[in-house]
Image (spheres, helix red, strand yellow):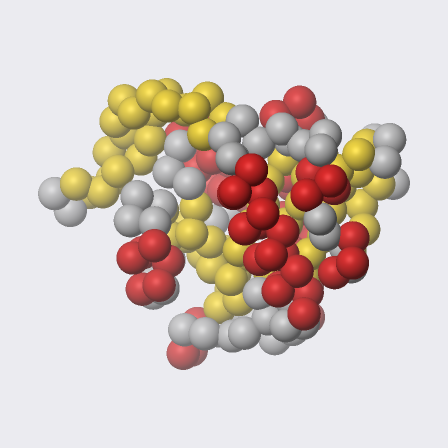
Amino acid sequence: MKNGIQYRQLATEELCRELFAGFIRRQNVTKCRRYENGCWIIKEAPFVDDWTEADYQVLVTCLQNTIRTNGFVYAAFCNGILKGFTSVESTLFGGENRYLDLSSIHVSEDMRGMGIGKILFAAAAEWAKQKGAGKLYISSHSAVETQAFYHAMGCVEAKEYNREHVEREPYDCQLEYIL
């Protein structure tokens, strides 16, 4: 337990919509990074990013699948309420770069800025390293605040892009973190 927050791995049977009842995904985005004319720029792109009920159902299914396929799902709880989580997939890819996919990392809006994301990221990186990865691969939201988090963690633009991620989310930033 750190700063009143309990951290632990999740089990498949725990993952259900009710687990996220106290989790606030909401993010007010004002500016995003975009790749235009061969360089990264910051553009005004105001919108509110939040998950629908359908998004939560997809998330639960994806996290259950991550655990079933021997991946890693790790969470932060405050007073027994889920306030952050991360997941890493188990399949290495990327040739000599030996990536493992950091498929998610989120902190509830009411708990951001408290160091929870850093602890979740460190746990994901340690797990990936123990599984033989050389790097974490991150297909990240392009919001300036999100990018600032990853850059503070030491992430840089990925040497190789995962085509599946780019096709699914063309505005995401493709990053890597050397383990």
